[in-house]
Length: 127
Image 1 (cartoon, rainbow, N blue to C red):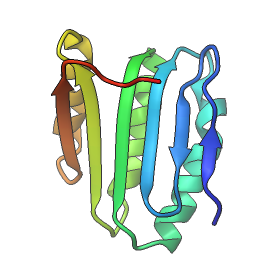
Image 2 (image 1 turned 90 degrees about the horizontal axis):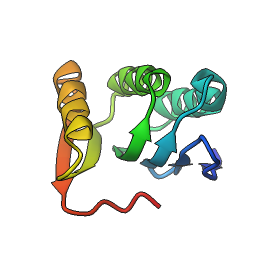
Image 3 (image 1 turned 180 degrees about the vertical axis):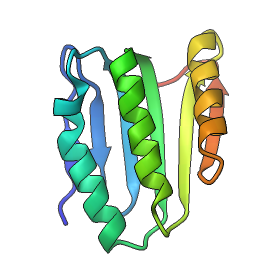
Image 4 (image 1 turned 30 degrees about the vertical axis):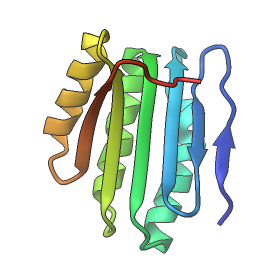
């Protein structure tokens, strides 16, 4: 299984899915049709979960995302819940970004079976 990497675009985030179980999404996601962008990510994650028993660490460092991307993140977390391996989600938010903190807290409540950590920092590296 090869790693999956998608460079950031004007409306799309940076995505890195590593065959060793280290996943990252960061930046901004403001696309009109997020399903198209995220389809290869879903396919990769489904295959990884079916074939690998490695622990998963998923780091989320989003500066901004729209409602469509929020639904897509929910679907990703739902998929990760199906993993037989331990899953840690690290949701990074700036101390000044109360919306992102609230969103992380909401996802944490929605997915109690995931080790979901809301990490509040003065500065978050979105690039």
